[in-house]
Image 1: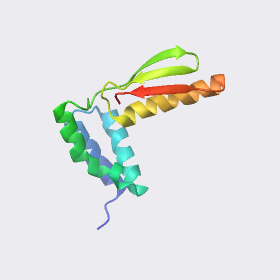
Image 2: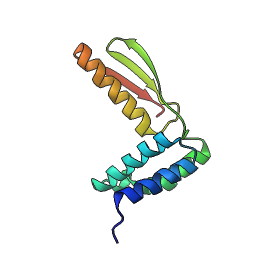
Image 3: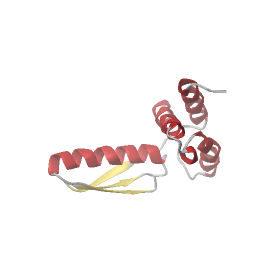
Length: 114
């Protein structure tokens, strides 16, 4: 039986929402999990939902968390994920790195706790 990605996205984002993730974060994480499954990386796909639920219940993941950036120099920054989903922190850090590299020719971005 094949389930369409749109249905999976709705299901996964609803589960994440029930676990406390605001809608934009729930959709972002659900998209990431579905993309991983579609690419054949099942270890990073929807099978993580029960693990995420346990981690949220244990306080290891803050489902509403967002990373905080600390700019060190114009081309170096550090992100504290504050226990946010890795997809949220990683996306923010990657965007910052791209922006800094475009402006300054290089970028260094460090991430912790996310």
